[in-house]
Amino acid sequence: MAKKLIAARPIQYMGRTYDRGDTLPAHDPRMTEAWLKHGSAEWEDTEQNQQAAAQGEGTPGAMGPMAAAVLQTLDGLGVKITDDAGEFCGEEELTARIVAAITEEPDDPPKALVAVHLDATMLAKLKTEDLEKLAADLGVDLAEAKTNTERAERIAAVEVLIPEAGDAQ
Image (cartoon, rainbow, N blue to C red; front, side):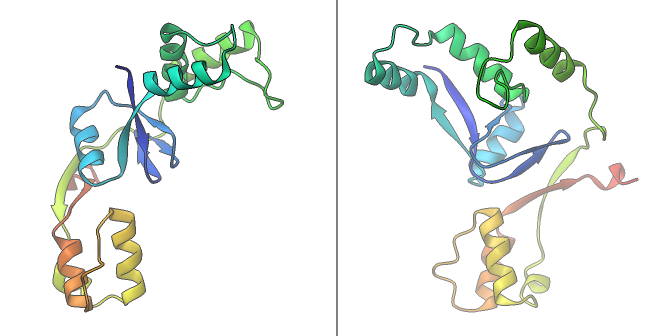
């Protein structure tokens, strides 16, 4: 069963921004677990989706599992196989795009992340709309929270990943 990790909200990781619906790299089990735990990502069963699409269309050019895996890998690298008109970009252009994607060095070196909890006392001083926006960004349910103190406590209960203090430059 082929699965891919899909961003449920915008995520910045390893010098790249992944928008909602983009395929996330799942090679780092710690990050994958954190994204899933906080509702920032979800698994999608690509094999089942491909089978349904192939059955629905009945086209002879339906994609096999190997081609789907290649396209998923290219998508994870940010390599597009089509041009602006939606046509295949061509073998030479595709090769150049793949080379550029795998040899490109990130602007900033990766930073070590540490899980922390925000201070509920400090959060309680924020405006209600700011707390609600922060809760939405972190995937925290505030439906039962009636006061800013309750909102702050719910937000503070969630672990947040921040760059390790020693990495600040």
